[in-house]
Length: 252
Image (cartoon, rainbow, N blue to C red; front, side, top):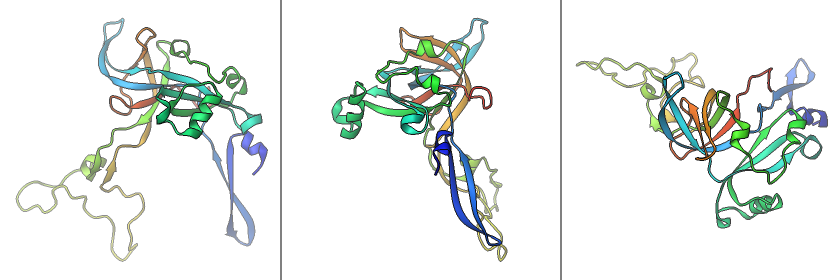
């Protein structure tokens, strides 16, 4: 509605709401910022990693395939907000749609399958990046630092409430008529309906998730890989986003 609201990366929606005859009600929604520009990676698998103290910890290996190139830089003056767009995974031209291919050629970038924007508050940080710039993982992440990793979780199909929501099952002995059923989903005359958000059977997994504050164990530039402590969303071959850990009120 106003340029100031757009520049502040705040979306304000107004709707008419009866309130004793008084005018309009505004709903203010704060957009999401990132702590810094991140990278793409491909989940290669998991392993046991031995630290310098001799501890064996679970670790995930993220392969850095060809890509991680800046494709566009957005600022307040040009687009109304500050962001850096990064492309990943170089593919043949026939696998990229022509409008997107033209967008990449304008930035002197090869055809890439995945594009992602990292929105930042600080314009000075955004201005340090240029279209066509190759991002270096060893310069962006150091061993011991914390990162946030986002990706799509493994899809598990249609599942019941026991597996999906960890509900308890009924007795399995003779005479029981409720073994793995979810049970009652509401009362009768009052309220005569099922409340929204009730935990029931349905699709499980295949949603976007972010795991926060994972520790970087190793950045291997020679093998083009990053070793992360713990688990990340997805299975082997899944694309994930590696970003500096966001701490609200401190770095974003």
